[in-house]
Length: 357
Image 1 (cartoon, one colour):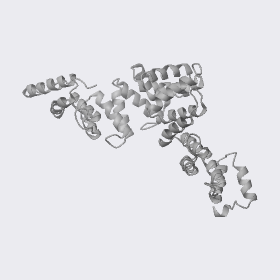
Image 2: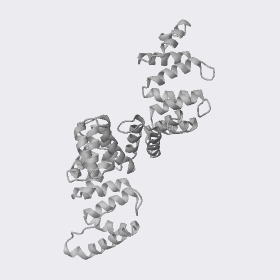
Image 3: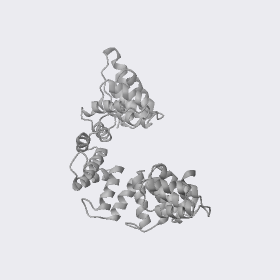
Image 4: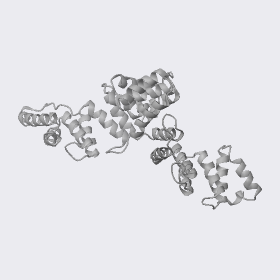
């Protein structure tokens, strides 16, 4: 939402600035951002912080002008330096995301705190995130909850989701499933994907409400459609097992593919398993190998064990005992319980030559 333009210029410039403000105001009320751009630029360049903030919004959102995060940062910075609280909040978010400018958690913290102290809910939410992750500041879950609570009470939905997670995990506050449900639902019903994901977990686990796989699926699907990789993986699991929805291996494969491409290791394992067993997709040992390698790079011991077994059995009928030994030994060193039988067989057959590994 663009803010109203307020004038504070010397008398000799009053008429020109008043005219520009009236043009901008009329254009903004009509949501004609193209017509609003020129008069807002006049006002912003003359030092009006509200106009500078609005110009930052237009550049950031690509309204009335080509989207440009760098210029959004520039104008938000001008307005924030002049004391505009909304601009300080917007600037903090861009520094945190590294959007239009190099990521800088310290500057994100500085501007978020400035705006949060003035009661800006978005800045209070970001302060909660910074404290919860220990970014730009010493990690402090109690402080995270404190700032999320302020923002959530003021209606910030992202903060409501954060507060729900805090109550779910008992971080910075006493664990409370009932309150986790209340805040997760508030966020979820207002479209926050993280809140939808958490509400799906609560339904799936039956914590704070009656267990319901169907409702877990519904909320996870909403979060999955917004790109939450963990929700995409969980939707795939429910399709794979048929819990809460009819079993559909093809749908499971599709949702695991989405999550795997976002780096979700569990989904990468699911994809590898689907390829290795021909579930939801034609069997393809090379594709299975590829996804197990991706998961193994992240240190997943199940992927290491599966790779060892795959190489032992052979890809397309061609065993690779050296690679089998490498991955089986790696999985064994990480405590995987199922690989010892393969190592014993390789040792008995004279295939386990650790000197050549």
